[in-house]
Image (cartoon, rainbow, N blue to C red):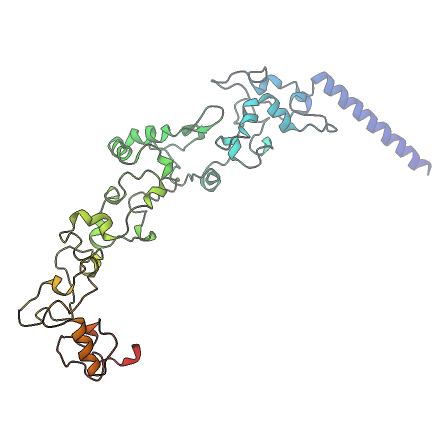
Length: 357
C-alpha cells in the first residue's frame, strides 16, 4: 500500500514537472519547438495577407493559426480571418472554393509545415475529381508542349476562376487555322459544348447515339450543314430530323408529293427513286394517266379518288354497289379493284376476307 502511494505521488510529480518543462519550452521558443517543420515561404508574385508576406512570418506565432484545445475557434476559422477573399468565395458557386464540397475544412486540401518551397495545395485536380466542376480533364493530361497541365494553365488570380479565353489562346498556339474556323462557326464559348472528355473529336463522337443516325450520303455531311449557328449543346438538339427540314429548297416537286420524301427516296441519292405503285398507271384507254387524275390532294399523296375519270360519280357507284350487295368501303376502290378491273375481287375484297370491315 505504501509502495503504491509513493508511486502515485512520484507519477503526479513527474507529470507536473513535464507540464512545467513543456510550458517553459513553449514560452522560450514561442511554440516553435513543437513545430513539425518550417512554414511556406513567400511566392514571387505574393502580396501581404493579414499583415504578413507569407506563412513563414508566422513560424514563431503558432497561436495565429492554432487555437487552444479548449477554445471553440477552429483552425479553418482562423485561416479565413486572414484569407478574406476566400471567405467571400464560399458563397459564390462560380468560384473555385464556392464550387467545392467541404471547403470549410481548409486542411482537406491545404497542408503546412512541409518546408519553405513546398506546395500548400494537395488537391487531386485531374480525372474524375475535376468533374465536380462540370469539366473532365481526361483530354487535358498534357499540354501541346508535352508537360503536365497545372491549375494555373486554365485558372487565374487568387480566386482561381476559370478563364474561358485561355481555351482559345492555348489551342491557337498549335492549331491556329482550325481554331479560327471553329470560333467563327461556333463561337468562343468552348464550354458551351465541350465538357473535357473530347467526345466531339474526330473518331470519338458517334452520331448513332443521337435520335438521327447518319447513314449513306448523310454520313458525309459536315456539322455546320445541319447545325449552322448552334453554339450550345441544347441548340444542337434543335436541328431538323425530317427531310424537308433541310431539303425543302431543293424539292423539285414543290410539295406536290407531300413531305414524306423517304416514301420514294433513300439517303443514298435523290436519283433512282423507287416507288411501288401497285395500281397500274396505264389504267384506262388513254395510256399513262397523270398523277393528279387520281391524287387531287398533292399534300397527301396517300389519298386518291376514282371519280376523276370515266363515268364514275359517287351516286352511280353507290347505286351499282348497292345492287350487288356491297355497301361499305366504297371510297377505297383499290381494296377490291387492285388492278382497276371492274369485276375484280367479286365475292371478296381484293383477295382479302371481309373481317376487316
